Image (cartoon, rainbow, N blue to C red; front, side, top):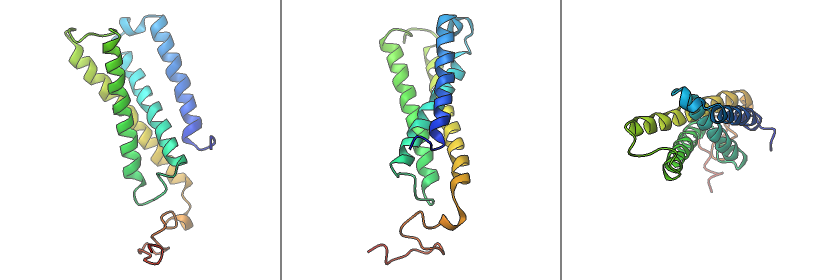
Length: 158
């Protein structure tokens, strides 16, 4: 279960994320370098989307070759966007940032878009590793309603 490809890579991404955030907080890089939060948000979007893609593949939500790209895209993008919005709300409620700040709208939009970019990177990575794991003979057998020719098998549908 933990040996599937998105999981080990997500641990590396998490280690990089925690290291960057710790250094950024301790050394005040978030305040000295206004651009520093962008890579942190991209990496956090990448990490959360990888975790959810891994969970979806574990629980069998991404088995159908016909729809797995659409589902993977939606899972990666929506989870990264949702967690990004939630993080911005937490920052607002804990008064790390303020709605009254002159650049609040720009900064929040930039952060959420950075999270979404991380989700798109996770989708791209997931699609790349899925290409490597599909065997040619398993191409149509991944979905129970298709036979080896790609035609709907009505007997399996009963």
